[in-house]
Amino acid sequence: MLHGRGVLDGTGALDGTGALDGTGALDHPPGDGQFAWWGRPQRERVRPLHAAQPPGTAYAPHYAEPRETAAMSGGKHGKPRRTRIGGGGGGGARPVAGDGGMLPGPLLRRRAERHPTAVPELPFEGRAGAAVGTAGCSFAELDRRARAIAARLGTLLSPGSRVLLVYPEGPDLAGAFFGCLYAGMAAVPLVLTTPGGVHTVPRAVQRCAPDLVLTGTDGWHALDVDRNRTQVVEADGVRVGGEPVWRLATQWRPVGVLRGAPAYHCYHDDGPAGGRLEAAMCHGDLAEVMTELAQAVRLGTDEENVGWIAAVHGLEEAIWRILLPVRVTG
Image 1: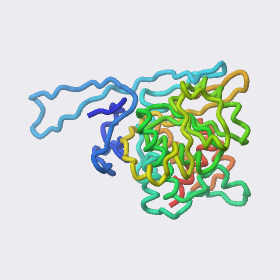
Image 2: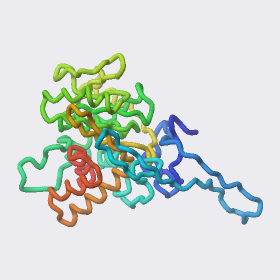
Image 3: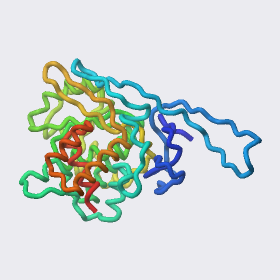
Image 4: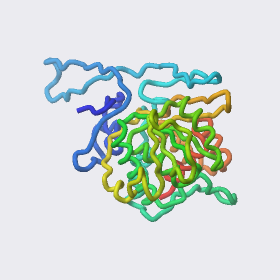
């Protein structure tokens, strides 16, 4: 049964925590029957089962080939970006064996199960600020934050909803980003460089039209957001929407996420002129970029050039510094 916006993305099998990987089987079935398929709508073309087929031939639906579309990133400086139905770049067409083929959300779950006390770290040395932008906490703690946020989001929004993340770099941003991945929602990070940088929030809300804003507590900074029109939830490592993190984390149930479902939008603030919202990168896109960055690290690529590769793929610095340590640690 399809749930929410759930449809197959054309790969025809399941991956990660109930998403697709081309193998035809579940490799990590979610517990308690809490499972849903979702993704962008796509027309299914089913091949009828003819009596002339050889005995024992298994029936399999045939899905329409992904068609090229031009997705406009928006804003007066926006440029058309070629993409495919179901995600930013059709990530999911080339699954990779092992950890490299896992989506970022299921990969963090695996790390938390196998190496709970390990701390995801960037593999670079000799730079004092090398740890800036990473989660800065253990796999188990990052997973606990993500599960709590995902559980809360699941009670407020449907999968595929857009969530604006207003945080400085650090564990709160990392937990919120992974929480969106766990919940099957598209994250739009608005990374604050200073505590007083909240003046950009109204522009971001107007341009991105999020279904909800996740941020630190109002005691840390007040946001100029009309809460009658846009929901705002305060979330940190202690509480999410006023509820204890430990309690919400136990209430989370896995949601199957398709590789082609939108996961991340990069937002650029252009000052008074407005802002630009890039076309969505899907979960498969993020997995592929992390695989490429991890390979670059193994080949000895320095930190600056790893960041350059990520930027070429449209991934902002604060986000690849959260995702890459989870990929290469453990």
